Image 1: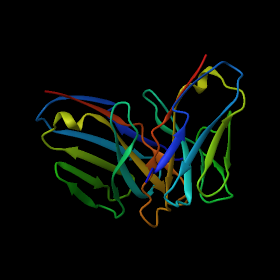
Image 2: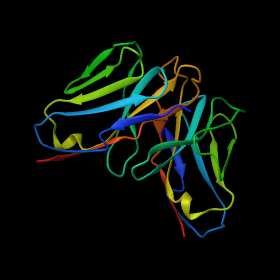
Image 3: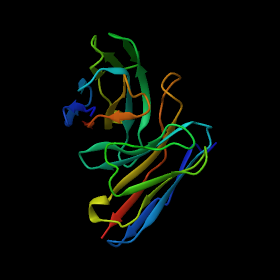
Length: 114
Length: 112
């Protein structure tokens, strides 16, 4: 039982390059999330998907796009990477808070933009 | 928008001392969760509090949810080196229950 799987684990990009972070969960959760974590800033929500077919902006959506491909997969795309997007990115999934609402996190993707 | 702040940002303690982190939300929360993140790791769920004034204990950890459901605290009694990490609170809003907003976190360092 893998839980939440993120790829790649590490990536180095040059300014202006594009890339997609992949996330898949095998817990049949409806909700999925993308957070970024910067030193001293905690976890900030980029985008979330409350259910298959829906996506919504979080706290810091600028410069990102997402796709909820199916119930299992939720990808995050950087169309034109900037140094300010250097961060650790975490994907997470959960059931709605009326149930447990506990978030299960992937191991993170460390992105460096030069 | 909803903001969740934590204090202190950092705390260094001697092993065996107690530790407390406080969490304050700008809006009323439907419930609050606590997570622990070890250095280099990912956040791991500790507990969820739902009721106003609720207190829950997990061994040496005591969690409290404020009466107004806008603040919370985590207290660790007699810290151990295994407690090292960053502790985050996270709140589900009352009106928007689709997204979980994390607090700024408190990084705990325990010296043996």
